[in-house]
Image 1 (cartoon, rainbow, N blue to C red):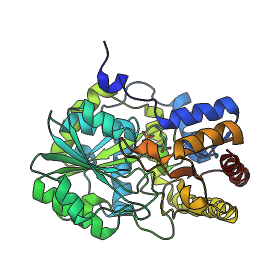
Image 2: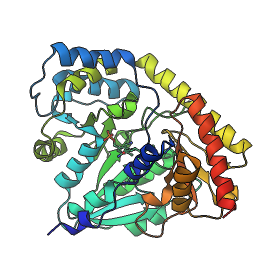
Image 3: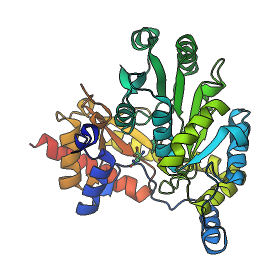
Length: 388
Ligand code: PMP
Ligand code: GLN
């Protein structure tokens, strides 16, 4: 009656935890979205475009003004030379871009290398597209892969590798030597890299984002995915982009045309305006988020929690075991949201088998008072857990 991949699939943890937070009135440090509403000027452009702009189907590949703005953005910030006409596609969020990549590029039986923890949409979509996942486990606290890991995972049947950098949920950046190693394997095995770089601008402490596409041999074999939701802290907008060489873009367009065909034109035009007018925004967003990260981290450390380093994304991770909590991540998170009024994400949700069960992820893209109260409630959750 139903496709077994979907019928066996649990509801995504982000929705599960946000629904529990809504029901219980808990502070939501689970799903990654900011407290603040996002840059007002960009929202005003969207409102203006709804009221007075063009609201019918835009071109399938996206508004030319947005595709040009995306190419210019990547030129300015990452030194990439992309032709907007043949190499940029606008999608309905990075989620659709990922679906286009998996449906458009995988043939039944192709092997796909992924890294765990794995963002939750990847594995079901890879399987539904007929791919056979080969999962490389990354180990905390550095969450890096080795040459031996790649030797074991790649084979002549490896069609794709999926790299999420910066990595959600570990909040780490892939070091340059690891990017170079991965590029070497992609070239050697003639593998296309799906580069989920939605967090590319959300990086701290002076870090510079390095796209895998810029490495030798990768220009023709990288599918680079971005999201305006993360660039502008407008996570509900679902405006994504794919940058890829013309031959790949042509195939991805065939998947895109029957997934969504287009993305709301008013939001596209506001994002295009935002990309051309936001150098100050990127700097202030990073500074504000780094301050929020430090605030939550210090409050948790003062309460005796062991906090893992966060180099990017909206997230930091807490090691429950090292914080004196002898409870697995899922049951701790359920207790925290139901009994202590704070939602978090258990890291085990990013594993299909043999999960890491001692770490929880917290979103710090929140106002100071939310963070302070969230930290207090997490301390309460720990007391409740210890008193079991
Ligand atoms: N990939 C990763 C790694 C993400 O963290 C997210 C959302 N936070 C997405 C994809 C989906 O992005 P979008 O909302 O643009 O679909
Ligand atoms: N990517 C967001 C997160 O990691 C959630 C996106 C979603 O809810 N699908 O929290």
